[in-house]
Length: 187
Image 1 (tube, rainbow, N blue to C red):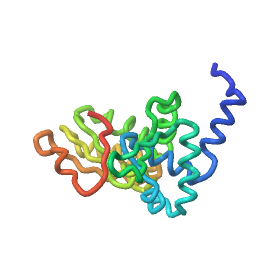
Image 2: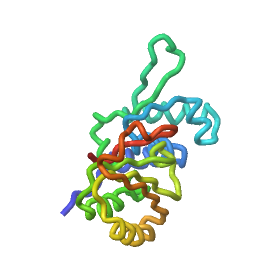
Image 3: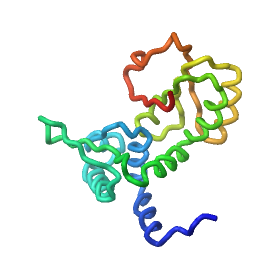
Image 4: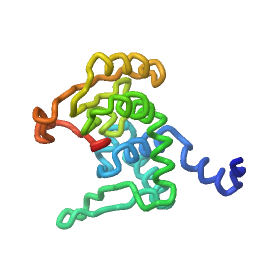
């Protein structure tokens, strides 16, 4: 049996998920934990004022969920990154992956194909934005008819359209993925 959540734990969860801007920030940072974001870019991506973004960034920084990285000569621009050493990082990332449906894609599609060597997430989800589409690149010896059967089954579960590019081992290199963000989901 699991333990009851303490009062302190409820306060942490309440402060983590209060407001859609904070959830959008957490989604953006936790989906692709190696990405760096900055104030003006977040203001543009989220469609809110820089002051609103700054307040949310400060709150996440106070919780030690994100860290500031200043870029050497251009110290005026602060970049924010998720704190992967935070004790709740893996749990929160799991929640976000469930929120966007990626956990089910990995469990129900990729793991069942068996001969997949690499998987890349591209598109809006790789940029940390929620999207009605999940864009994937699969590299390996993939049974395409079976892949499409699995996609048909998982799309209603996650309520997203799955778009896939499939490459054989010798056909693909990361250099082919230009002009957008991407993240490696498995190797």
